[in-house]
Image (cartoon, rainbow, N blue to C red; front, side):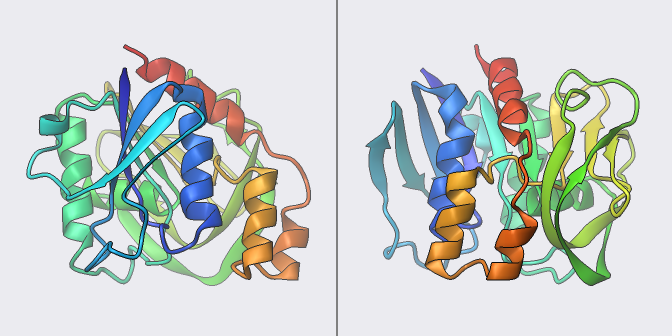
Length: 239
């Protein structure tokens, strides 16, 4: 069975946390998902094990070595935190990404995960003057099996990658974010600034939960094709 490790950094927000994870995992089904939450001092308030739609979920301690878990993929989610305002727990999350890349395990960084991945590998992340909340056209730079077909992305961020790390190449740009998508050369490692997991049901649930205001809901009215990205990544990871 396929095993996916998710750095579950939005567990505090039910829609974008658990709901977003379900969207990420759907193309992998049937599969096992191991959830790492290094940002939590205690995870007692959160579900530890459950099963849904062919996916079994288990929340575990962050391992000393990601290879001990033998995953087919490692995914780093978005976060309420900011890479530009570094916190101690980010060291553990960065270590997981470094280990996965060194072991040639497929990696996908989403929003904060994209920024953390780039920062970890030697890039730069800076905070913009204003927050970007929109669905925006994506402009392909070169060709990439995973990202080139994707045309629209949902963005909600203020930090952004201002310099890619050595060995990474820009794959996607937008008018507001030059480094909206990247791949590490010769590695199955990608980062995207947008949120492919933000399906219509996730957005509506986030609004109902009070985690998204009316202005944000209106900004996300149009469709985006994040589900195509998630499906393509899952296919790439299948053993």
